[in-house]
Image (cartoon, rainbow, N blue to C red; front, side, top):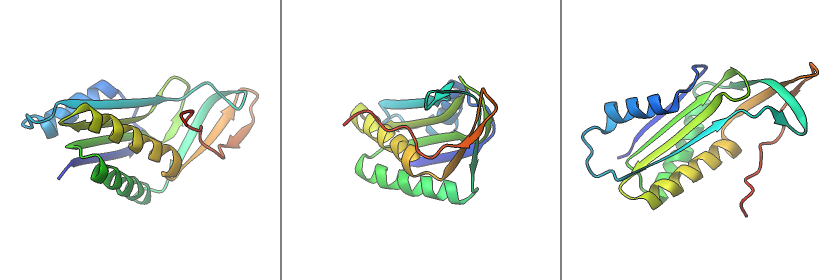
Length: 152
């Protein structure tokens, strides 16, 4: 059974600190792990050709975590991993700040890479987060679509 931790809060993300803490608390005795894949996503300062000064992310506590957990379970049933850590920011975020950390651990890199990528793509496309941007000109708008993955 994989160790899975899903955390959603307004705490700034220090990716390497969170990874180290997770490994010490949950994986210190697991000597079969040979790979860890990590993705961090940061807020960009522009979207749809407009300069964005802040973004506020909202979610439904409980429902969002359950949706993410369901998606993680589906991915790790196809790409066995020993552990998965997801930390997603909500609240106000500024350009350059980390929005999300997704990490997977497994015996082999191929499983870890594939699981990490698929979990993150699911976060982008199906996790129930609502994003409101404040533009440099003062306008406020809801983000209606996520950035598409440029890979075919």
